[in-house]
Length: 452
Image (cartoon, rainbow, N blue to C red; front, side, top):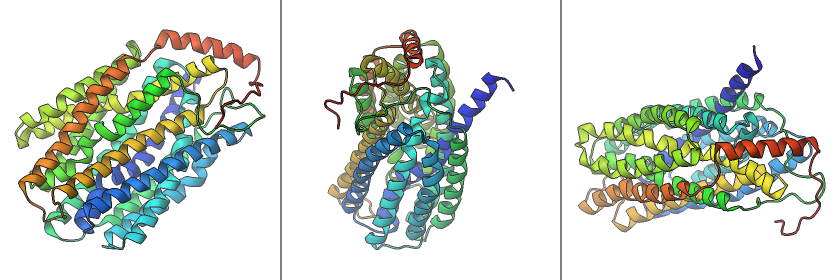
């Protein structure tokens, strides 16, 4: 086996971890609020607040996980050990959460405790897995390809959720019968552990340690203009662009009154994501990723309101096109983030890789927290009280949540992405500078003014 093929296999094995992570994350993101309101009968405002508070706590865990990963790297302990350790705990807490929900346990204490445990362990494996990406491949164009691999695995996970879990919970809501959530939880947990352990086995030692051997470990990275813009893109992606898919079970159940509609549209969306991943990944090999990302966001902003012009029978076609656009929206920031980490390493003379990844993920989840809470509060405001809710106000609210945030967020994100600096040529120069710096050994600067 050649070195190039071994690197490619390692990149694919690393990317397989996204299947394990996204199987758990997308299940919770797409269905948990609906399960709490429609199956367990919790008030939507309360359910949205619970989800937001869980994600806010998760954000604290993400920052702590970044610091832990940085400390582990400083002392020569690879990120992959965190995946070996925390993947089983995360999978077990997820299985418990869905077992409680499937049993009809409306006691909020048990649900909340299981949800918090799941979020804690998820953060402790998500951050080190993402922080591994800059070391899997170093070339800017190759990173666009690896981002594509990651998103393909993520889309496969979402497809499993849409084909199995989404129709199960939607049909249970309309029929009043229980949903078999326990089986899904166990299967998802097993696949999660397997793929994350495969990713851990593909770990390669960092080419340059993030921190010097002395001084305190930072919690937050140094901030540059491009990194700050990436944080804004993460907030918009997690909070606005994801709202289309996040609202789809409500849209199918309470706007179209069709238990299978959400599954059909979401399935088409995920298939579109798989096709779009190839499109945007190929484009990023030829054009700068920041410009490709800007076009992907602009396309999503146009296609989401266009979805309303289609009759219900053709809306899966709209879902496919939106999914193709969103593939670039969610995949490409990871390639750009890796390049920005390198650029900031050159700029500041120090590398804060786990911290940069953890804060980006924190902001991404913060956007999700805002979006989910806004859904719960909006539904509460229009009198939504669960599975039997039917009124023009509720239908209008569901329609607005499905379309407006994703359309406006896509427009804003397109402008921000276009304003990013750098590209393939400048990143190649950064790699040359970093190679020269590596030959001089690890950083020894002990000036830690402003560290957090």
